[in-house]
View (tube, rainbow, N blue to C red):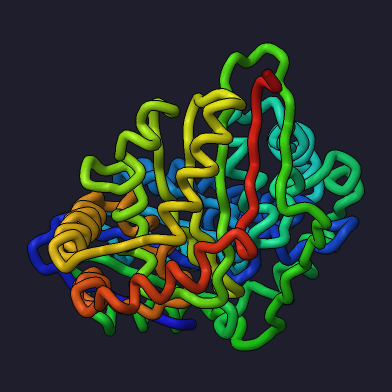
Amino acid sequence: MEQLIIPERSKVLVHAVVGIKAGWRHEEEGKRGITHFLEHVIFLGNKSHPTPDHEVAKYGVQLGGMTLPEYTLFFFTSAKEDFSEILSLFLSLIFQPEFNETILEKEKEEKIIPAVIQESDFTPWELAHEWARNLVFNWQFMTSLGTKEDIESLTKEDLMVWHRKYYHAGNSFIIIYGDVQENEVIRAIKDANIPLSGEKPSPFYVQYDKREIFIEREAMKNVEMVYGFKFPQYDAGWEILGVILGNYPISKLWGEKFSKFTYTVGSQLEVTTTGSGFFLYFGATSIDSAREIDKNLWHLLENLEIDEGELELAKKIRILEILKMKEESERGLLKFVSCNPSLMYKDFKEMIERVNRVKRDKVLALAGELLTKENAVRIRIGANK
């Protein structure tokens, strides 16, 4: 099991994340929803810990889980004096679950099937982002928590096979942030009897024949619009572009050529192990204004200029965001994982150092190569007039 310990001797709390490198984009047709289902199974208890929520409650601890495209994450925060005991329980639940058929069927009916995603669950701007992510990453967010038909067909044996394949030391990691000793973590992992080997999943790709999608919403008076750009690998220069083309007073999209057409703009960088994406958002505009935004955006990107002063200010803003992340406790650690999926950064300091090393020419080269019409997708949702 890959281990990453971020020591912070001044902290009175310890935050822990255990990741399994299997997520919903690894599910084949007929098994969609199994990742989310198994995440729930982990918290249903096992023979050693039949009522885990009650066991940890006496320490003031809550156990959490999250189903993501490439990972399933499990996490908790505890006082440092309780950490070893909670971690031992946690690893036992994750790697030694009990598959009680009666309890599984009850969980399926009450929690898993009702969680299946409907398009109506999303606001228009959320839906625009999700469709942009679909086209950039070649996945389908609507099946991320499964389909009713697939979930109904899932059996105890299916869950056991998925767990046996992917829940093992070679396909997992643990990140600890706080005042802990490395030998303490090593001992807990050893005592957990984690399976040493198994399989590593391969992603399933959805091929789309469109680079632009318009979804009409008759009740809407406005249009939500997202542009997405695909790039093959992470570079810290994208962190800078996220500020220069983002929701900040110094950002170029705050200029008059955009602000008079839309009430807000934003940027989002998303990093995966199989490729990454950069997204630009324009909120609550109109069809006519969307045309003006499109014209102005391509003019800006095709003639992008960044001076050294803008670069340094963008670095300061991004570094401040990383420092905020560091102080956000459990939530901050989960953010650290989401923007660091390959664990290339060993701590927050490394992230800051990489941002500080970004050069102006590199940022312009990235933008010139990948922020192009040929590499773009566009999603619009809303009124057609």
